[in-house]
Length: 286
Image (tube, rainbow, N blue to C red; front, side):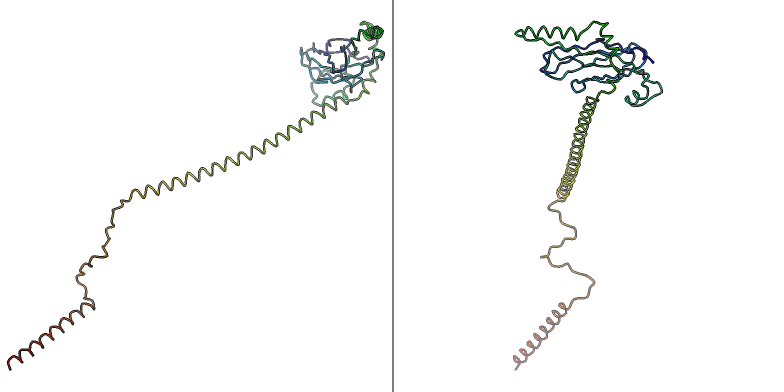
């Protein structure tokens, strides 16, 4: 059963060109456009996943939406005599209305709905002018690697889909591993920030408590000072009595023992005085 034509519009349509020298990474760009009224899933595969970095290598295109794909060729030693067999394949599928599953599961569940388009990779490397023979060979290789549209379509038709299905997913695994590593790093940073936030909150609470304690101390000391200032220094209690003044007379009370002794002593002196007076009068009469 023949598969339907590609849903997406791909630019360029048949080949990806990479301009050398290839001592550093070289980028080429592909534009995918969804001309339909449906959401389209896409995925990009290559026969040499370790030599290319594709961003993004899968995704979803909404109706009339376009997406630019960056394809970066890793540095390598270019040999014009070596035949280039690198190829890319763009797979696409209309998003099912009643399905909500992982993209990989969709590819496996509906293989008959997959639509694909293949592109060749063409390396164009400017050679040194001191090597004219190699330049000629390079031009021949470039011409052989960039056939006309009819030859490209014929080669694409002969290209086996099994070769793409057997391709390694190392590039995807590496990107997922890098993404997981970045997520772990962000989570660690988030944990550290949360810990610092908790410490700052504890310090703020402690500072508030210390400030409240100091405010209470200042208010209590200020109250005591105000109370001390409100009492006059010269004020004397009503019941105050000078210890050096004689006690006030106590009326209606029985005299104490000291008063009785003083009265008896006074009577005794008077009696003695009377006796002495009588004796003196008697002697004067004789």
